[in-house]
Amino acid sequence: MVEKNCLKRNGEKYVELISEEQLKKRIKELAKKLSDDYRDKCPIFIGVLNGAFIFLADLIREIDIDCEVDFVKISSYGGGRVSLGYIKSKKGFDAEVDGRHVVVVEDIADSGRSIKFLEKMFAGTNPASLKFVSLLLKEDNAVVDFKLDYVGFNIPTKFVVGYGLDYDQKDRNLRSIYVLEE
Image (tube, rainbow, N blue to C red):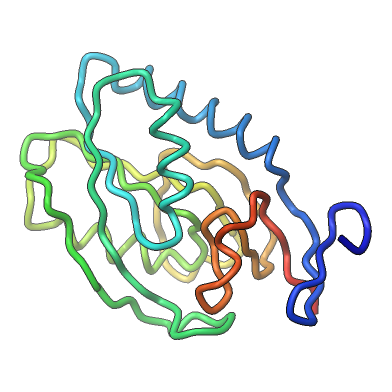
């Protein structure tokens, strides 16, 4: 630790944006809302790999209703800090979603391309409902119209890591969310 709420890693300065305590509190709030909204239903929570796996794990532990879990894997980053501008599917969902309530769990929404891609992924199915929850939202980055039904935190247009979010596949294990300072 260099100073309170800062890290130096690999020659870069990481400044804490959202603390571990803030994450835990907000995830409990989201889980309560989801549990209330899906009471007497058994939704399928579909996590978007790799970034959302920690968020989904913590969210599911706070959900107090019956539910199922599945995963999809998509990629919009080829490495580094800049999106490729297009989405690639690396793994589709396995669950039977027809007639079921589906909640897609994302780590971060910014351009909206991933959300639109995921909507299209479910277009050939017939879920009872399709909702999206994202831990983080960069509202000012949207390049397409998209809708999130549940949002953890609105954040500035900065590159963030930690709590599942990576920089070249590293830093996912940080317990807080950090901004990489230039």
